[in-house]
Length: 320
Image (cartoon, rainbow, N blue to C red; front, side, top):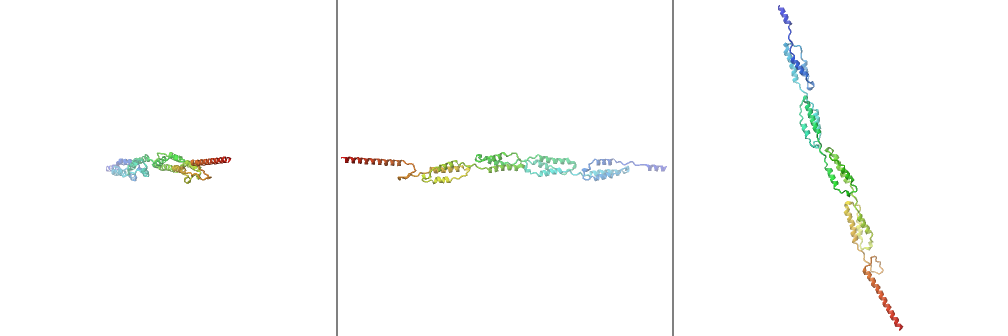
């Protein structure tokens, strides 16, 4: 009977150990995305170390397995969030010249708002940071181009009297070609507009001065007989002093040339008439000369009358 009891005891089997915690820990590990972590091998090793079929007397061993898995999970470290887009956006912002824009504060604020140290589970937040910077950059508005030189050139053109020039169309075309509303990135184009106007102004050619009065005065001088005057040098010098090739801005000088000739002609004095008999006098006869001729004629007439009276008297005397 004693043996039977011993055999019965020997045949007894312990209940299996409780693997509930182990299974929960394994389920928890399986629910994780191993790619989110820097090193998932600790969890995998703890799971692989689980030994099944432990009995209730080994429950502590089983519980230790569960704890090993939980500890491995707790020791996991997330990978860092990917800041590639953030860094690219910041590099893009830094490459910009803030002085080119009306207001760069939005970009600066977005860059300043970046928070480092986010992990992979916070990637969406990091991506939002990058987008905020990109949106701020996209919203930037360039400053207007500087039209100071253009406006100065136009003012210079407007101050000119177009009727003084042979062809003013080049300046008009350059002014009409000006396009407003260019931004600071197009400054070189705006500067070219200003230069085009300045170049057109520099190429302008004045109309020739009007020499009509000069030519008329010279013609008047040439029609005179210089030998009829005491001194014709004033007229000759005034004509010789004429300078051709003056432009319209020098019209007053040209008019002075004409006036100088006219004044020299007005100042001429004719030579006096000659008093010698038989002398050719080309000057018109004066009233004094005409009266002298009349007295001479009367003298001859009266002398002839006296001679005739003497002849008659003598004839009468001889006839007696």
